[in-house]
Image (tube, rainbow, N blue to C red; front, side):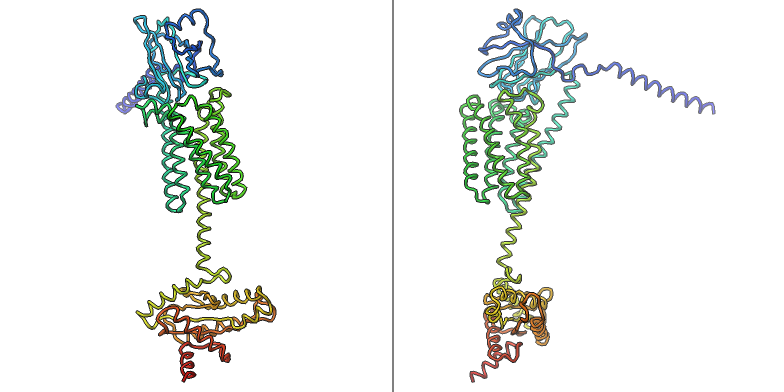
Length: 575
C-alpha cells in the first residue's frame, strides 16, 4: 500500500513538471508580431524613372515626400517610378521579417536596406526579373531580411509599373508568412486540380456525347485557368520561373486568348439557332481579340493596355446580349450559361475598373476575376451538359423517325426488310422457325372517300394497334411502303397458330372503336406464310403475300388465307 501511494505521488509530480515545462516553452516563444500589416510610409514620384537612391534621398530629407494614402492610385505608368520611405517597427532584438508587395504583375520592385558598412543592400523582384532570381520565390514580390534593434536609417522601396496602380505592402513575421503561404498554395493547388478535373470531364463528354462544343470548352478552361494562375502568380512561380518576358506578358495575353475562346464557344453554342448576325459578331470579336493578343506579343502591353480593357467591356456587352437572347430561346441551357458568364463578368469588372484607375486595390479588385472564374466553370459545365443531352435526345428522335412510322408507331419498311432478311438467314439454318402475316385494310379507300383523310388515318392507326396487340415479345410489327402491315412471328410457329393470330387480328378490326367514325369497322384481310417460308429473300416473300391478298380481294368470302394455298389456286387457275 505504501509503495502504491509513493508511485501515485511520483506520477502526479511527473505530470506537473511536464506541464510546467510546456508552459515555460510556450511563454518563451514570441507571439507573431506582424501578421501581414501595412507599415506607415511616405512617397515621392520620380517622373523620369531614372534616378538612383542617392539622388532621391534629398527629396525625402527636404520634406518633398507625402504620406501614403492606401486608397490612392499613383502614377506608376509612362516610365514613372514611385519611391517609398518605409517606417519599419522598432525591435528590441534581431527579428526576421518578410515584406511583400501583393501584386503579382508588378513590373519592378526594388528594396533598399541599410547595411553594416553604411551603404545599401539592394534586392530586386517583379516581372523584369525571372521569378527564380527573386529574393523569395513566391506568388508576388517578397523580401526577407532581419530587423536590427539599432537601425537608424529607413528602408526604401522603389516601384515601377506599366500603368497607374495602387500599391500595398505588408510586413510579416516569419511564422505568419509561412502559414499564409501554405494556405494560399493549398487554395491555388485545389484550383489547379479543379481545372484539371473539368478538362478531363469535358474531353470525356466530347467523346461520349459526340459533341465538339465540349472540346471548345476544354480549351477555354485551360487558357482561362492558366490566365488566372498567371494573375495570381502561381504560374510564374512553378510553370515558367525562368522566363521573365513571358511571365510579364502572359498576364495580359492569356486572359485575352480566353476571351477569344469564349467568343468562339458562344458562336458554336448559338450557331445552330440560325442567328447569322450574332455568329458574325462573335467571330469578329474573336478575331479582334486575337489581333490584340498578337499586338501584346509583338509590340508589348503598354500600347494595347487601354485598348484591351475597352475590348473587354465591349465583349461583356456582346456576351450578355447574346446569352440573353439564347436564354430566351432555350432557357434550360441558356440560363445556366448566362449565370456562368455573369459570374466571370462581375468578378472581372473589379479588375478592369482598377486598371482604369476607377477603383483602388482591394480584395475584390485583386481576386474578383479568380473567384468569378471558379464560379463560372461548373455553371458552364452544367449548361453544356443539358445542351448535349437535348442534342442527343433530338438525334434519337430523328433516328427514330427513320425506323418508326410516325403515324402508327410501328417499324418502317426499312426495318421490315432487315428483320425479314435476318429471319430468312436463320430459316436456312432451321427450316422450322418463323411465320409472316401481311395485313391490309380492305375498306380503307371507302373510309377515306366517305370520311376524308382524318378518318383514313384513324383507320390505319386502329389497324396498326390491332396487329401490335397480337404480337408477342420478340416479334416485329412493321408497315410496308404500300401501306400494309406485316407481323413477323419469331420461333417455331405452326400453321394453326399463325391462323389463330390472323383470326384474332380480323376480329379486333371488327370490334367497336372510339378512334373510328361512328358506325365504321375495319375489314382486314390477312395473308400468312409459315415454315417452310416461300421465297429466297424478303422482297420475294412480301410479293408472295401480296399476291395472296390480291386473291382474297378477288374472292372475299375468306378474309384469311395461307400463302401456299394461294399459290396452288393461281397454278390451277392458269392450268
